[in-house]
Length: 307
Length: 263
Image 1 (cartoon, rainbow over the protein chains, first blue to last red):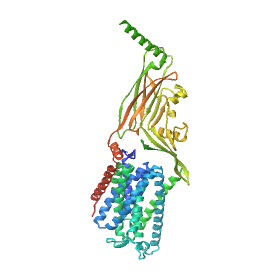
Image 2 (image 1 turned 90 degrees about the horizontal axis):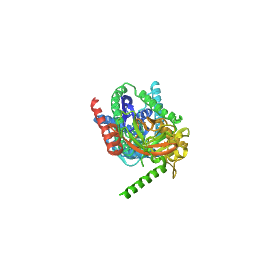
Image 3 (image 1 turned 135 degrees about the vertical axis):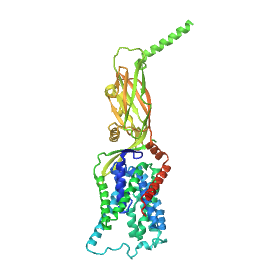
Image 4 (image 1 turned 90 degrees about the vertical axis):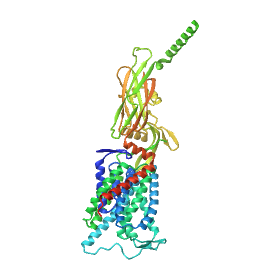
């Protein structure tokens, strides 16, 4: 079943895109992540230009995080104050990210920049996750008790000024690191077409010591709003958001996520983290290899429009 | 009365004389027509062909054939600026390094003739009449200079090659068929990704290596259907399009949370 994607300017098989959406949705439901870091590369690998892939996946991420955020909201697993401060940084970060995207595109380095940022981020995060996962598994094999994430010692972050009380998370913390994290995630999200949950969740847990019960729901609110802003900004500046592509991805994604979430409950936490780490690492390495291989075609043409 | 008739005769005679001296340039006239002046391209369009018909009209009916006619048809699609970039190996990875900007170059360019252009006209005529892709002006901006470079320039060659691979530039020295010595036809292939806009068709008639006469016609490519509507909306109303896409995302997410609600 062929369908012509209006913005990507490319005919695709609807079932293939639907299956990709479902597969990534399954993985994202299983690990409780958005899955943008898998979706964007997959779209690039099937021939959609990196720019369109990034811009379209932002709206896909908005859809999947909204359905997630709704269910976390019902369970009161979202800290509104924390979400608000994260968003202040996040929206600014998204705007800067889209501006950077436009800049890179006009100098012809956008594809390279997207590939490079995937290599750096995914190999670093993936490597860390694999390392952590292996250590945790070895520890349980030896019969040691795993250390809890929330240790008592305080770090320099707690010495910063402008402290605010986050009631639901039972924290008293400066807004500076919170907004800075939001800024970073917003920037990365707009540039790479990812929700950023896979970086945000560890940051909230290990740096800010947000209770794990609040982390996922709150991070989904940040993803939701930054991705909505990114969608609108990408559409307004670059005209690269493919709504048809996004809709197919959304439908596949939200369906797959339901089955993934059920499958995820049957696998142990450490193994899950190790699996996810390997997945992230593999995507990063794939990008790295791509950069080093001599491309079949050295020249590219881009229409810059009638002047 | 007789004086007026005489002067009229004189005018006609001078005109005829003038025609005779002007040579064959005034003797032929081209009459052409395309099969479809407005082509509608639907989303599942996978390429098609337009047909150009024409005939050579002569003033003096059928003089003895000293030389056969030659015909060159050039189809020029809507013009736009394009950047061609070249990747080079830097720090072990392939990066876009050098680039050239092509200014207002045809997005579609097809040159059809009844025999190889080299055989139709001499090099200086080909250059002057911009016959063939190699002689078509493709202006580049190099720094502050605007110029077309030599035909074998790397960027120009790559640009033409990439356009040819997508079926957007084409040169066929056997596409024009003379059905009779004066009646001709040629197909104009339109690939799936044919750019929308208005197309100029230049038809030039040659005889004995000289340009005898020329004429022009045009046609239009319009894309229709839902996909084109989306593409237009995205380009012309970016913000509204973005807001609607964002709303669509919210609606889909909300639907999913209702359909799959478990608590």
